[in-house]
Amino acid sequence: MKNFLLGVAATLAALALVLVVLVFSLGSGASSASGSTASPAPTASAGVAQRPADLTADETWLGAVELRSQDVVSAQGDLVDVVAIGSGVRFSEAGLRAQSLDIDATIPFATVAEQVGQDVTVYDAGNGKTGVERQVTILGRDITLKATGTVTADGGQLLIEPETIDLGGPSFLDAAASTLARSLATIRQDVPGVPAGMSLDAVAVTPQGFDARLSGTDVAIGR
Image (cartoon, rainbow, N blue to C red; front, side):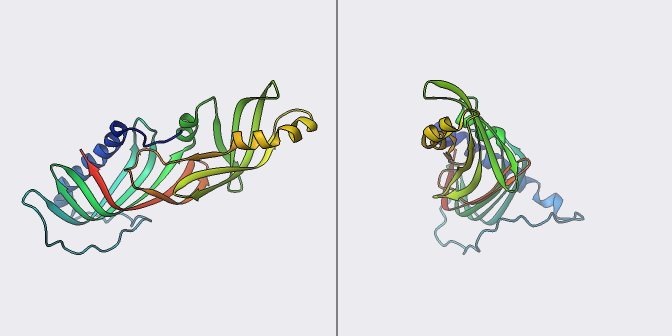
């Protein structure tokens, strides 16, 4: 999981999914407005946008757009329980540009582990902690490294830092290899399947994965 948004093709694939959901929600808006129960308000919230005075002939402006999807699947990794709110959205043949965009989503542990690779397992360790297990070679020995630690939003990325490390060997081995083991158990990654320019603001561990909140301004979503 070196970088979920590396490569233009991968980014556009994720953004095209947002565009499809937007068109669907616009097409179904009229029928759902009568006689239906309003869905609960999402936890993310975008700012109030001002009507633009410079729309071009091929642009449509949307004051606020709300998108929901149980699953979002992309080449970079899957997300679940996704809620996205865009404010001040310009829509044209070139794609979308949102004045502001907020996203709430759950990142499954499998998505994180798959992107890290190297037979890494990431799991809920209880009490708000994250567990990391991987096969490593330290001091010439093949070892199963197990670590538990905290997950935070740091610099717009997801950061897992170990607090406890178990190398499954003698105590002298743990002490001699602790620095290397700590680096091997530390994970820092972007969030997959979201438009470029989105930054991770908050994250928490749940039994299903990492509950993440992201935000961005002037986010371009092109075809």
